[in-house]
Length: 260
Length: 329
Ligand SMILES: Cc1cc2nc3c(=O)[nH]c(=O)nc-3n(C[C@H](O)[C@H](O)[C@H](O)COP(=O)(O)OP(=O)(O)OC[C@H]3O[C@@H](n4cnc5c(N)ncnc54)[C@H](O)[C@@H]3O)c2cc1C
Ligand SMILES: Nc1ncnc2c1ncn2[C@@H]1O[C@H](COP(=O)(O)O)[C@@H](O)[C@H]1O
Image (cartoon, rainbow over all chains, first blue to last red; front, top):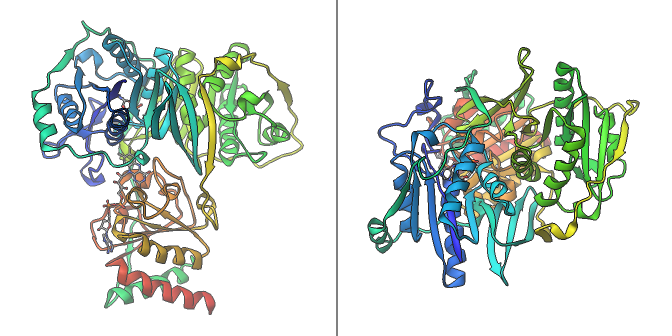
């Protein structure tokens, strides 16, 4: 079983709104010096999903693919430390500032270059652009079936059986292989890297590709502008001698405002 | 003439709320472009929903009815819409930011050689270029970006509760056309073999007038039972931020936020949650936001109308007690 997981390095999504800043020239978030970038959280779930399939099969290879700057190596190493087998990194100015279509097309080209695969896993959406398109896009470009928001993935009799999260429940879908799945957090907590895993990952080579190895695709959409929305208004803090009294006063306040 | 097309969804024989919202949005865009609105309904047993779409603003409704579309799979839906696009050649295609819409939109866009923008909160027509400008939150809602694409059809999904439906008018007239995409069912690579409904009892979270929402700081499944009681007492529904769902204290389907439910109640009470941008994405449209958090610096206070800084374990029982007294008195 050959699996490819697409992971992306992003500005920490837990960055509090107060310290979130935009670089207006680059039209993207400023990376703060004291807050390292992280693996996009759903991509970590995607690595977990692949490792679960590998565990169940008792065999298989999990290849980690990331397109980004030099530092994208950190999230590849992180995924290798969790249990991934091989790393592939795409770094080139021609891969920067592309839209979801070109991102998907570039990753699909790299996947063709990697060659053999049975399952590709992506996150359901990235924590930076929140685009939610690249996974399905890769599948469409490669001409393979896809299922989004997957919370369980298993392989049975040469087919995948996956559970897809719906607004009020889930559905079970049988899919022919090869296929691509985008993974949701319901798949379960990503495993921690063990010390042994971290040491093994440090030794693993990461294959590097530039636009001379993978032809860069043209974007189909443009971002016109990006801004931080302003919020007006004040919060009225309800006080009390004790926390209990503040609770009582809050109820009185809401009654006064005719809200209860 | 090119149209603004919407892909509708039917729930228990009726158009979903988000479908009526998209029809409202499509009417506005079509007005600015001087075009018509057409709706596409796929499924088996569409019945009266086609007329309902007309009463909410469609000029023309394509029905694609076949067992193959009873369950959503992107192989079947993208295939059918690809065929319909070749015939109808719409300028714009809109759908809801729902489980199916977010799966369908990018795949359809890439199949048709165009681009999509998902989870839009505003759609306008640029008067000069006549292109659709698509506004969408990015970075979990910390920022907002505007996108445009020249490739046709321009495709977008719309976040629920951000656009207004037209008032239903059953006297509106329109045309209903059955469309047969002529797909081969044996070529479908996905098959839905089971569907499990996990519905929450009581008032539906998305429709509730009062939402009591707990966060990581609530601490346990047992403590959530008290919040559930409070929600019931206020005639509302219980919601949660993501960590309580991930921890299994509450079911996943009451998660509110970017990747959960979108709510916009009259009263939202957020308890022991920090108010991350991703959570705010699902509730910032609430009319009155009340926060209880022991940390005066928590983000949630930034968008709240009323707040209490303190331990919820002390604040909430007293609050619930007083509410009970006020509501019975
Ligand atoms: C792409 C993406 C999508 C996401 N989608 C969602 C989503 O849809 N919904 C969602 O909610 N999250 C989502 N998240 C996660 C989000 O980033 C936050 O991690 C999450 O919302 C934090 O939940 P919280 O506020 O409950 O927890 P925390 O941020 O840990 O906050 C807990 C709060 O409780 C307070 N507290 C603790 N104990 C007490 C007490 N006894 N009394 C009073 N206050 C107390 C603390 O002061 C703190 O402010 C998403 C993340 C990503 C990257
Ligand atoms: N630059 C990238 N490198 C590797 N994977 C990516 C990249 N961009 C997007 N992806 C994958 O596509 C998923 C969806 O991304 P998006 O459509 O941008 O929300 C992510 O969760 C990743 O799995």
